[in-house]
Amino acid sequence: MHHQLTALEQSSATFSTPIGPKMITPSAIILALGGASWPQTGSDGNWTKTLNQAGIPINPLSPANCGWETNWPHHLIPQIEAQPIKNIIASTPDLKAPGELMITKYGLEGGPIYLLGPSLRSMPQPTLTLDLKPTFSIEQLTRKMESARKNFLRESIQRWKLPIAATLLLEHFHGPFESASQLAHHTKSFKIPLQQPRPIDEAISSAGGIPWPQITPNLMLKKLPGTFVAGEMIDWEAPTGGYLLQGAFASGTIAAQSAIKYLQTNE
Ligand SMILES: Cc1cc2nc3c(=O)[nH]c(=O)nc-3n(C[C@H](O)[C@H](O)[C@H](O)COP(=O)(O)OP(=O)(O)OC[C@H]3O[C@@H](n4cnc5c(N)ncnc54)[C@H](O)[C@@H]3O)c2cc1C
Image 1 (spheres, helix red, strand yellow):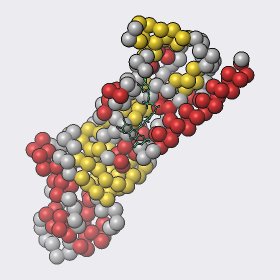
Image 2 (tube, rainbow, N blue to C red; image 1 turned 135 degrees about the vertical axis):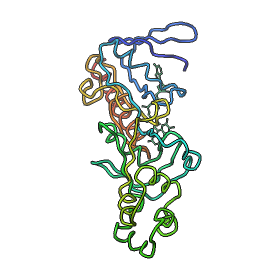
Image 3 (cartoon, rainbow, N blue to C red; image 1 turned 90 degrees about the horizontal axis):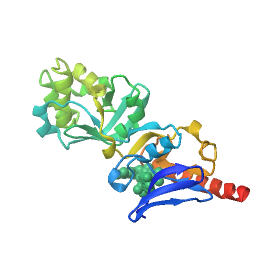
Image 4 (cartoon, rainbow, N blue to C red; image 1 turned 90 degrees about the vertical axis):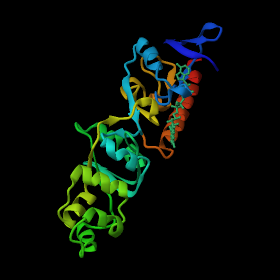
């Protein structure tokens, strides 16, 4: 505890400690230094500099499993903030994610947008498409509006059970609506332009890290034989729901077994 790894060389590790620097020369090293999200827990990503100094290139750490920012109109924020949009399907051109999103002051949070993160990051202009009524077709929605002649948005709150916050945003981005079928079309394919992911220190995990070509299949750093790596510090990504922990535990197990084997072979 209270040891911060500050330098790494072949078979030696240097720490800053409350009583000054300390160097150790272990027979093998396992690093599990995490990503750079939630730095208050100690996972600040500063190890990237330490590994860089040891000659290991690192793919930049970036926010993953995080909210995204968009420019909601200021006058709508008091009405839409903290409103959930439930039972939707969010999508990008190559992925669909069902679930619930939460509208925040700055944009959107929630499982579906976390899952779509890698796909959104690959888009030159990230755009989220929401199907707000995934169990109904455009034709079915239009039929439910048959007797309505005007005020389609207001009617949709009753007839389609659209949340008020969603109707306000639909109106802002795609209104006014001249017909029920036009509104049904946008309800099934509501496009929201996004600006950028939230900052990494708010994210649940980090993308980037030690590139796979820098490590052997048994998770040893090629440039520092005897040093093994595990967890989020390797460049892999997974959605929340246990998959990140699974990846961390699984790679930890492999790193530990490999370190034992390395010691048995080399001692
Ligand atoms: C708010 C939140 C919610 C999450 N929810 C889920 C979830 O529901 N499901 C899921 O699967 N995952 C979830 N995760 C992600 C999961 O916690 C991480 O993926 C996992 O903990 C990564 O494990 P790790 O061992 O690689 O790194 P970490 O758990 O980050 O551990 C890294 C450790 O290294 C230490 N360290 C860093 N640099 C140094 C250094 N230079 N010297 C010494 N020590 C150092 C840090 O202090 C830390 O103790 C969540 C994460 C957050 C932040």
